[in-house]
Image 1: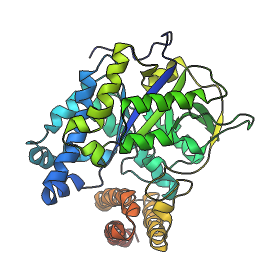
Image 2 (image 1 turned 90 degrees about the vertical axis):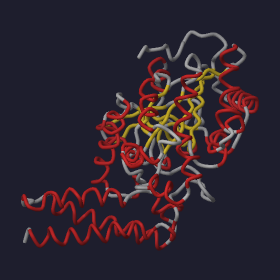
Image 3 (image 1 turned 30 degrees about the vertical axis):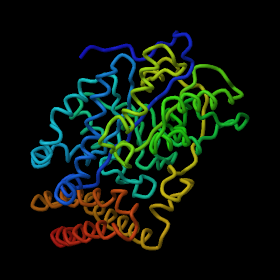
Image 4 (image 1 turned 180 degrees about the horizontal axis):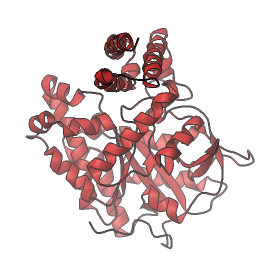
Length: 402
């Protein structure tokens, strides 16, 4: 793979850089369930994943895209059964290979089972982080340098765990970022340094308003005008500005549009990068790792605990996932089974139950999938299916160790 120059810090007329991000996730076993129950929806979704490297190759000279896959989605891509059943829509192994070959796509790390980190036991953080990074490196041939927190749910206490895992930056919702000195207004168009305990990480603010438009529908002209207008209102109008937009990449009719000319890649992305290619744009696509190498942040900030805005929620708390009594009770159950697991794991585990302990570990982590909480009463039973099985297996191990 030939490496291309991803950012030109001396370029004239491109004082605004744009980091485009797409978030991809399916809960456990969902690709298999989709192809069984709704083949049309399954086709719509699998084609969302395939379009990214195809358009990245088509506009290799100017396009820059960030993509984050949950570990459990990548695991489903590896399934021989899924590969076979989706073959008449998309060749999944060839699709993964095309991601590997696209050096203008930056792979972003995620928690393996897509957990809401601030709502799960801290003892479980490392397993989600390490395994999520490992499977991305295995499948794409390069370790992710940046991290996307599931549902943009972030807490400053995550910084040591992220830094220990080797992440250099994390994307957060701009509404939660506050410069540490308090003297300046927060600037959503610049990265910051955030510290907690003895660890540090770069935080990249994601513009909420334009990201919402990216998910629902926009055109290149509106995007260019909106970005320029927003940047011009900044009192600290020093270049270069980093405008980061991030959204789901496979949800909603805009991304799933089968007539590509009417969807994200045909209606917005192609006209936008063609403007860039022709020199008719003040906005230049960039990969975050390259931007941060040329323009390392100097200012420190604090990030308030919160998430992104979804459904009817603001993202200033976690009400979408923990707003009801039933959701909170389900989270309590996760803490219970995790605590029982760790009480056993930290002791002497007999040889004859070690495989069972490994199985329990997977089930506990899988129960922390955010989707089981996101859909409230409808999907909470999926969480309890896993915690009940974990409890049965924990009982078996507890009896064997006493």
